[in-house]
Figure 1 (cartoon, helix red, strand yellow):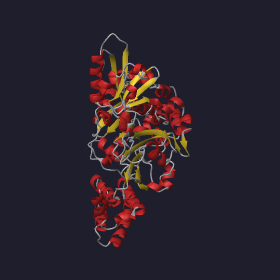
Figure 2 (tube, rainbow, N blue to C red; figure 1 turned 60 degrees about the horizontal axis):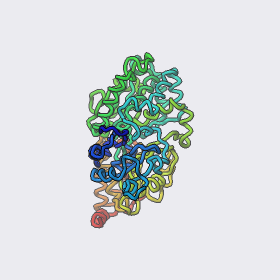
Figure 3 (cartoon, rainbow, N blue to C red; figure 1 turned 120 degrees about the vertical axis):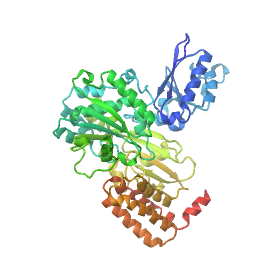
Length: 538
C-alpha cells in the first residue's frame, strides 16, 4: 500500500492481525494513505502481525532513524491531525511552537523501549509485528531459514539431538519433551512418516498460535520442515481451526510463496530432501485439539479420541509414525537449530527450558501476548505487565491453562511459571493462557460452566466424560439451589474423581480441575442464594 510523490519514502507499519483489524486497523491504514497523499508524503504502509500489545491496537509505527515510533490506539479520525502534526516527517520535538505528534495522547515513543517490549525475550514472536508476514525477502532478512540451512547440513540424528539438548517441551499443554517424541518417530521403521501441526487452538483466552500464524507463518513452515528432515518424513499437515480465517489466508500465501522459492517441494533449498506441507481446516470441534481426535479428523473421520497405546509417534496419521506438535513448539525449533540447543536451554528454570508465550486475557487492563523465559511469577505477569483488572475492582481469581485449568485465588499468584511448580500448586500451565476475574465473578457459575463446556464438547466415546459432565451440571444446580447441599457436594466430589480416573483423554480427565479448585478456594459461592445475590449486585 504505497502513495506516490517525489519525496523520500516514509514507511509505517500497521498490523493486519485479526485482533487489530477487529478494532479498525484496516480503516486506519486506509486513512493514512489518504492523509499522506493529501500532504504530498510518499508513504509505504507495511501490514505486519501484532506486537501483542492488544490494548494499544490499532497501533501505528513510523520508521525513524532512531527506531520505530509508536502511536496507539489510533482511530481513523485521529489520522489527519497526527499527519498534520508531523507524525510522518519526524517533527516530534515541538520546535517552533507548533502542536506536534508527540503531544497527541496516542504517542508512545520508541516501541522497543516500551516496558512490555523491552522486558520480553522473544523467540516465537521475534518477527511478529516486525516483518511483512508473507514476504520471503523480509523473512530471510530477519534471520529466517538460518535454522533450516543448519539442520540440512547435519545428519538427522544430530538435529534430533539438538532439540533434545534444548530441553524443548511441547507447548500444547502436556509438556512432553519434543526431542524424545522426535526420536521415537525417527527410530520407528517406515517408508512413510508425517509431521502434523496441531493448530486447533481452542482454549478460551489463548491466541498465541493465531498470532504467530498470522504474523510469521514462514517460521511454522520452517519448523515443520526441520522436524520432517529429522524424523524422515516427507509430508506435513497443519490442522487449523475454522474460526481462524485470517490465519488460513496467511498460511496459504506463505505455503505458495515457500514452494515458489524452493523452501518446500522436491528439493528443499537444493538439498535433495523432499518435504511439502498441506493445510487442512477443521470444523470447529474443541476435541480436535486432542492429538488423536485431530488425526481422526485429518483422515476424514469424525473427531473422536483413540485409546492409547499405540501412541501417534508409532501409529499416527493413517497408521504411520507421526510427529504431532503444536504451533509454538514447532516455531521454537528454527531458533534452536540456528543458535544451538545448549544456548536455548540457558533460558528458563529446572525442567522448563526456553520461553513461553503467555497470553493475558479476561478482565485485565493490558491484555496481550508476552513472551519470556519460564520462571517469571504469575503475579508479576498479571499485576506488573497486565495491570490488574480492567474494571479496577479487586482481583479474585486467575485461571491458567484454558477452560480445564484450575482457578488460583488472588493471594496465591506468587508461583513461578514452570511446569513442575504449577503441578506442585495443584495447577497446570497448559498453553500459557491466563484469564483474569475480578471480585464479581461467581465461582459456582464458573464450575458449572466447566461441566457444561465438557458436555457440549465431549466426543462421546467414553461414559465418564459424556455422562459425567451432564450429571455434573445437574449436581451443581442442585447445590446452589439448596437441594441437599451436603449430599450433593459429596456426590460432586465423587463424580470429579470418577471423571479424572476414568475418562479416556484429557477432556473428561481435566474438567474436574476448575470444579475442584472452585470448591476448594471459594466454597462460599456454592451456598444457596449466592448466585442471585451476585446477580443483583451487578
